[in-house]
Length: 353
Image (cartoon, rainbow, N blue to C red; front, side, top):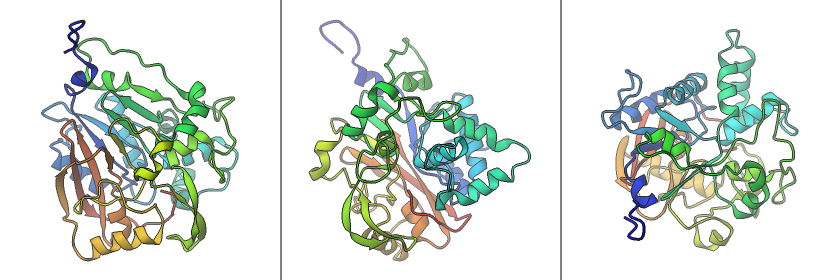
């Protein structure tokens, strides 16, 4: 309570709403359904929850698994039914950019070639509605006590795109439902129009590679590294910065807890609420393989979150396992990390998060 004016503080208000923030699904519908059941949702009855919890999806709904279309349709419908909110991941961005003919995206990314083939073969028009849904997804949500984004709140990139993508927060009316309240805190809108990128959106590189400033927020900031071979045996000399390590903090917004996906984490059975190495790097690959191969990760679980950073992309299990897919969630405001596994529906491929 604010003693000066008698109003309830914004942080106190946020704890009145309960939601489950689901990380990268990548077309693995069985694992998503199992996670929903574990979280108490009636996944066969419209994903209702006895406590009226709201679902928040962190993007990367598609590619790799066999059910990209079905996952995309499910989340689209849950948003339309006011049971979910979704932000944009790099895989949604790549599909939309390719579909709209954005410069640099004419050639399909390795990781979404199968999805693009499915879109091209779609004679019923189901994918067109899903792509339109992806096109309009916001990039970031800034709650009073939690920031939500797919990859990172990189300050230099934010400064360059702020005048183009920043959304002026509008206070939700008293008694608003959870979805209205969360949407009132959308901080960064979609970078797309119906025909391409927003006019005037800065397109110059924010670092030494090809990522524009708005892409950095969705894909991560890259830094130089000794040459290495990624999961596709492609030689690279840049890695995504492990920004939650303290030596990188000055370049990022770090003043409140944050939840994100994108970085190939595994469930935090060893206390790692964000991965210790960059995505695609051999050190991360070896770390994931050790945990998965030696049975150190239970098929499902829940762990209290410690610290202020939670990466709920549990694709590290999916990539390291020959037969299991894993999807995770952060339950907020309870600060609990949940995960569930199910049979992998397709071979993993691609290296871009």
